Image (cartoon, rainbow, N blue to C red; front, side, top):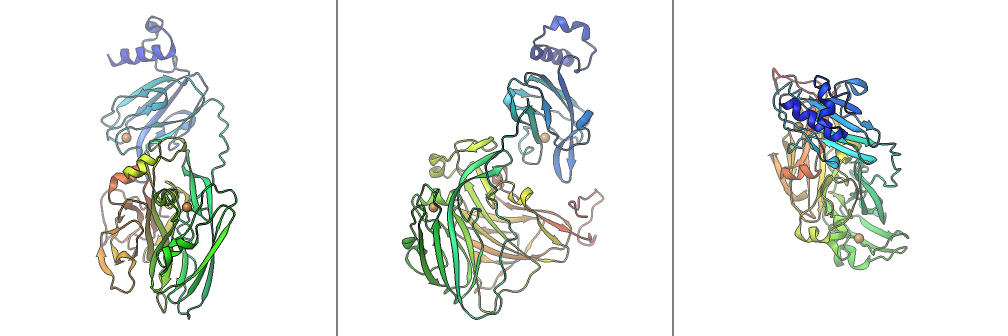
Length: 458
Ligand code: CU
Ligand code: CU
């Protein structure tokens, strides 16, 4: 029965009548489809993936499937891991049955009626996010050279520790820009930034320093921008005197009265819109004598984007005021793009290292339940207060929009640790980051008869 259904599907897609196929009843998919692919589901380095199972794509993880325009395409998937899966190419309305049990197989057949780059994926909730997707490339797609720039902030760019020095005068030049940046592999957004990254630069001073901020708005901006530092005691945190038109520069000087880790952001109406678009960053005001030395420091900020297009759409995503006012973001990111801390940049440490994270929420709206899967924070400087004793042995810590935290921990065991907001629906919107720990596994800390992925930790 299943064969007949498949044949009928093949015949319909190929534009043949079932009669014409009658003699080929025993034939495999190959004779009717112009192009066939076989993919196997697998667990690879802790992720769910499709792996090529035959032909030129054999052994490739998430292979690109290239087909001519107009071709009838058959994609067979074989269940290689025993979990329930399916395969779909939404662009061409192709969707398989659910595939249950190791060794089970199913095939989708469709005609690739238009040229372009599309997606194949497993539609079981969570599986795409876990890695079950790839590209279907139809026709001679000249990969359009996107002019989108990489706005993702490198989390390792934390500047030099201030350490034990006397207060001094420091000058920072900030430039506000409006650029089309990469939101993910295949989608872009028109970001507004400080110095072309999201978040903006990590600024680092000492309590008692006086700081001059020169804020320039790029010539090609369309909007007025400004900056409000939460570390500033004074009018609007600086925003009252830095509403800058395109091409202009405005300045102010403040004295850093309080140590701590502070958010800065644009404060030009509609402020929520400017922040959402990427206009936030942090300034660290080190206490007298500086902070303790650690092996690694990372700078991470959480943000939200409100777009007309649904999460997962390709191409340029457009801002949606309705969704912003409803506080319903389509996309959520650490360090500006969905790939920033999973592909673009790799946070890494060795077993035995001490790690400090400067974590803040640009937002503009959602409080983060900041958590690192598989680790416990040894110390949490709650709300980034350095003058209160830290909390110790914390699993998850709340960080409000326009707020920050500083966490410290020693990494004791190799693996891929995943940074999340424990409101985990948000991971489905792009919010995730990896901290890869390499080194020797101590069986006294963790042991299992199952093969353990020490996270590409060689
Ligand atoms: Cu799946
Ligand atoms: Cu702005």
